[in-house]
Length: 77
Image 1 (cartoon, helix red, strand yellow):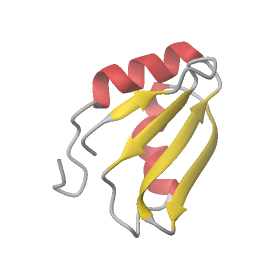
Image 2: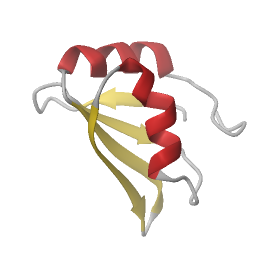
Image 3: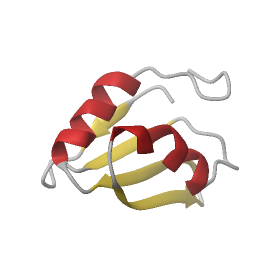
């Protein structure tokens, strides 16, 4: 996942890009869930390769973005 950037919508929504087409919501919840409670996860299927994840608290989204920006998932930058 090359970048995770916060949306300005209350700062709770995170864009996750550069993911594999078969990435599941459960995988993303596992990676991002340690930063706080997740209210929604949406994984794009057509076209694939990105997702949006919304935290209950904007501070959790901020922490996740700070920690996971540049994170390599399944070997992808």
